[in-house]
Every structure is written in structure tokens, then in C-alpha cells.
Amino acid sequence: MTIDNLEKRPDAHAARVYDYFIGGENGLEADRAAGTWIGMQAPDLLTTMQANRAFLSRGVRRLAQQGVDQFIDIGSGFPVSPNTHEIVLQESPSGSVVYCDIDPAVGRRTRELIAGQERVDFAPGDIQNPDELLARPAVQALIRSGRPVACVLGAVLHFVPESADPVRITATLREALPQGSYLVVSHIAGDIPWGDSNNEETLKRAFEDMYPRTREQVARFFGDWELVAPGVVPASQWHPTGQTAGSPEAALYGGVARKI
Image (cartoon, rainbow, N blue to C red; front, side):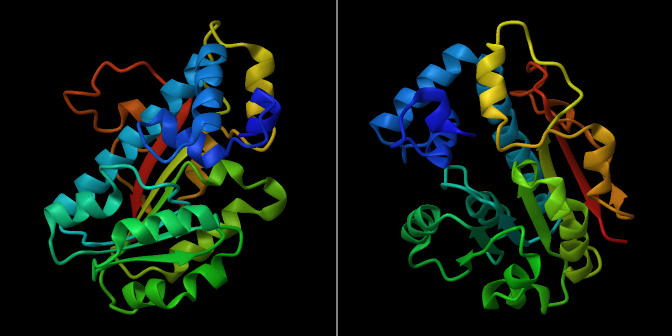
């Protein structure tokens, strides 16, 4: 999201503004101001970010409850409770989680949070360079175990342009994972309309470095893996809980698939 264009505040940081939207405390005054302004101009962006956070929490928890205890969270962003490792370790105290992000500030904050936790790590990495990311020792340790790994791509692929070939990127990640592994994806939708309450110019600027995609395009990221029911659907419709049932439909797809 191009925050400096939206709010004319170059000191605001996109990841921290997202953090502000989902209830985090990592933002500065400039980030909070930008977030407040965006929320007023495009309230559906706020709904979408919150829907993303809720979907990822449900997806991680559901897999952890089914016995998956190894997770790689790529494009993890600033840590906000409940974090991936908090959910996983609550369900399986012997579980392991590796966070990956290209942003050094995210890396510093994540390392501060997980300091002293033996089974949680952070590995710097760019999703547009999956081979380098997969070669990180912390990531390799999970893959080489031979046991299923859940790879979480939460709201990160829509920052990858077609010129970088996101289908190839996800294929590379899928190929590296052991049998029985899972892929969790959330992605801004290009074929779900935004409400009339949103300022069109604000949305246009917000999407300057995003690439919304259709349901069919998002489904391609799972390749020939077996989609977990109900498949690729608006994120709020993916196994809603009592708290999320009936939530407004956000312009966001979510899906989970298994390597069979």
C-alpha cells in the first residue's frame, strides 16, 4: 500500500499501518494518523485487513489441531497476538515456526518477540526469490524433517507482479515441501466489488503496488494440491467461527490445500 501517496506522510510505514489496522502496537504516530485517514476514506480496506488476520488465525489453528506442528510464515509482517507461533505452540508445545519477511524492521521486532524461544525463528527472505528463502537453515531444518510443513502466504502474493511469475514462485515452494504439507493463501480479490462508501481515488492509490486477482487466478497458486473444503472462497466464508460468522464479505480470497 503506497502510504506516502495516500497520506502525504513519508514517515508512515505500510507494514506498521497494517499492524495498526489489525490491533497491533508497533506503529508510530505517523502510522496511526495514516491508518485513521485511510479507514475514513476506504473503510473496506480496514475490513479486508481484519478479515485477513481472522482467516489466517483460523487456518493456522485448524491445521495445528489436525496435528500439523511445523509452519513457515512468509511475508509475516509485524507480529500481532495471537501470532502464528502462539497458536501453534498452544495446540502443540513441541511445534516449530519460522517467520520470513524482507523488511528489516519486521525482522528486528520479530526477533525481540521470540527471543529465548527455542522452536521459533526468523529468517530474512523475499518471496520473489523463493530458492534463496528455502535455502535458509531455519527453513531447511523443517523441510528436511520429512514431516508435513504448513507454508503460510498471508496477504503477500498480491504484492508480486505478474512479471515476477507468482505461479512459478508458489510452484517452487510447493515442490520443496514434504508430502502431506499444506499451503495457506490469502489474496486481495480482483472480482469482488468494493462498496460505494470507499473513495475511488484512495482505492486506486492503495492498489498502486498491489495486484488484485480473480478467484481462478488465486486457485492456480495451489497447483495440483488437494483443496481443503470449501476451496478458494471469500476469506470470511472459510470455516467461520462464532465470532466471524456473518462478518461482512471482504474483497479477499482465502484457501488451504494439501500435498497428496
